[in-house]
Length: 532
Image (cartoon, rainbow, N blue to C red; front, side, top):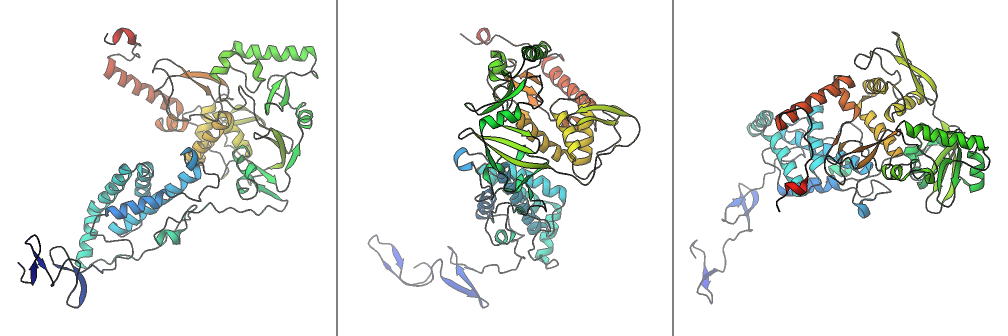
């Protein structure tokens, strides 16, 4: 054999070793065990203790990247009502779980390559990037590798690695984060598992037996699935009752309505809406129809009326609106909340009670602007959108504050921008965005609340129907972009007017650079422009 070991000639006249060392054989150097590599060189594994975060002197391996992403994406058991397997879409809880794991991964990388807890800004930046791209297969793997390489290759990372090599730095032991995790068992995560778990809920009612609908997950699935319709109220445990269609119609007949009609429940369609009935006098019916026509004359579309009373144009523009063209499936009468079960159009009710928060809203002096809200008239500090100096007072929104921001979002009041600005200043853009999405989707279940509009037609056709709040129909074009109110306000340093002007200036610059004019380019006849 070339290496001096003994061997024999096989049938192909090749010398085959019959003994001696070969790759994979055990070996040792200075008493440390190792194995022979393919070049028959004894390789001693690195037994340095790096504190459990991994070797700070080497990049993430492909196996480590795949393992991290598999654990991040594992959402099994997070949401009891998950539709991911059937529809391929993630619920808010499942998205929250993946975002939570992305932060844990970034934290691991900071400790591995920098030896420290990540700063808030760095953690947020890298975790959002990973959560956004981690579900994209190879793109997700590339994103995680890039994040790790960027942290490792930073000046701080290089200095840390040098300290490790010189023995001047001792890697820290692995620790648990000092913040609470909602969807991840941290002990299982640190043991190399995903640690997926559902949100822990407190199912203990208050002294009167009331509990938030959000905590009914393991008690009443039907109610829990409708928790977004029960903001600001608690539900009496054990109060669920069946209600006949006739009893419900008797209950809702006397309820106040928008246009002077009467609330009606149709058990055949399972929908509630405002219409006319034989209990109404002819003059009352005439007044109802006149109110509808007056509204239409102003360019508005009636909401929540008898579906048979909509015009064909209104049906097309308002398709999919809850309480718009098809009626609704829920209504509150006094302290009873009624829901229609769409599986069989049966009706159930729950006893509810408004939440009384610790503080009431108050506003600083300096002049006020009246606002109309569902709970009566309210006032906010005057001064215009740009320089409203006050904030909402409570640590979390009161019922009145919620109703005010609700009316502002749905376009029901004047001076809506002032209310939005104050709300964002007090509670931040994240809470505003959550409320905005919830309210718009309660009015329009399929509402797109931000981002690029998708739909049929060209970018100038105005063929995608929509609503401004729940008050006025609007048509937009595919390719147009919805900018949320808090972003507009942010562009204007707290002023929605100033932010809108910034966006106007941006549009002017883009059109000037592209078309040589600030006006929108006219549409073309594609049939004439295309080659024959």
